[in-house]
Every structure is written in structure tokens, then in C-alpha cells.
Length: 312
Image (tube, rainbow, N blue to C red; front, side, top):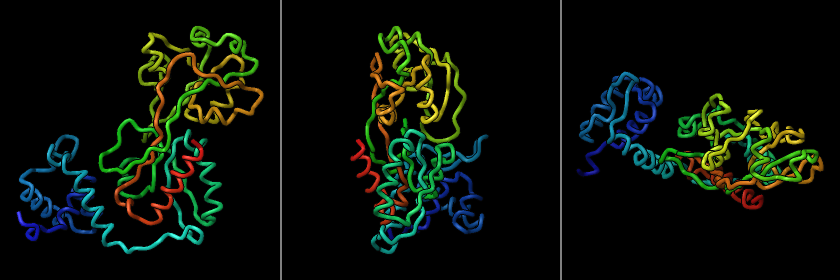
């Protein structure tokens, strides 16, 4: 098929249709009429010789062909946008801009303070709007409504760009008055009460059950492989709250080492390595292909990567 015979606007239509999975919403997003969008979908079906979107009980669902096309179409549209957008340098020292960044509580307590110190020096008028993972969906990120997400992810959509920030292991926080400090091993660890703390991925979290070791995260899954289970007495999604509980003499807080190390100079707590192996995890920065070539966005990504390397 000769490229000159293809209306490239149809690729924009397809990009939005696969994102919205609704003809009316796709038309509204592009500022065109619903009949025009329906006609565009008809032409797309002819172009690709595939239904692309079919009606199901749950709404419009993509075909296998459409799912394969989505990241490729997203990349093509983003590349075209980068070509036509005006070139320019981002002057951080004089810029007045808001960056919307979604971060986990772990990221907020470990990376963010260092970011802010660096930004005060390099970009005093740049503002951060910090969102929690439950505030943001992958669709918000894909549309460019959120500049960046920094978190731990099991899976990310193929169309997103991503960059590892750092790897981290785990440490245990206990009170300096906790008798377990004199004999800290797997047996005494399992006999103690524990604080569970985690919030991974995006979207509203679900409730936790103390007996459901699988699904509670890396720590409990590592114990499950040993046929063991800890006694969880407190569930929290906030690292600051968890660390404040560490000085209670009957509780153990097992959390990422970079968060635990913030209390390394606190005489009321002791930091110990876990008495069993827990796999490391990776903190990742992800963003929409729509923002890949934006000068201001490139500056922010470089700043985050530089700060993370210093912290690491």
C-alpha cells in the first residue's frame, strides 16, 4: 500500500479510539462530531482489514490486532508530534512551570527531599504538584495529564517510556529497648509482632488480610517460600507512620533500606538486616511518549536521574 494513499489523520483517530475505547469520548477528545469519528473507525477497519474495536457486554473491546497495534500507533503519533512541536531550550533558572508527579510514599520519603533541594538551586520558580498513586491512572499518564510516575511496577503498558531510578533492599527497624535485639534470628522474628507497610503500582488499594501471605508483597512472599508467616499487627500505607512505630518495643518494621536509613542517627531505634533473604526491588520512572521530546520534561528527567544517582 502506497503511503500517499493513507490519510495520516486516521492514525490519530486510532490512537484516541484505542485509548478511550468509546466512539463518543474519542470524538469529544479530538473535537470532532460522533458521525465523523464513526466514519473514521469505518475507514480504519477497511485500512487494517480488521474490526479493531468490537462491542461486548463491557463496552468496546480491542481485537488482538488492535492490541498489537496500540503501542506502535502511540509511538508513531508521538514521533510526529515531536517533529512539529517548536524546538526550544528549557531555561530552568528563569522558568515558571508546574510539574505534576505521582510518587509512592516510599519515593516521597527517600527521593523527593533531595529533588527539592536541587530544584531550589537550579529552578527556584518551578513548582511540584505531588500526587499519590491512587490519584492517577495509567490513562492520565498516557494522555500527558501527569508528567511522571515514580514507583515500583510489576507491569507497565508497552507504549510508556521508563527508566530505572535505583535498586533497594530491605532492613528491619526495632526499638533499642526491644529484647529481640540480643537474639535476632528467623525464629525470634516470626515470634514478634510486625508492621506491614507498602503501596505499589497505581489505582486505589485493596484491604489486607493478615493470613493472606501471597499478595502482601515481597517480604511475606519471601517468607511463604520458606513455609513461614509473620504476625502482622499493623497495616499502613505510609512509611513515615511505620517508622514512628519502630520505637515501640514489641514491634518490628521491615521496610526498604533507603527509608530505614533515614533513622540511622536516631538513638531510639536499631537497624538490622532481615534474618532471611528478601529479593531487591527496582524503583522506576515512567512517562508518556507524548512528553518524550519536550525540553522541560527532558530537564526534569535528567535532574531526577542525577539526584537518584547521588542518593544511591
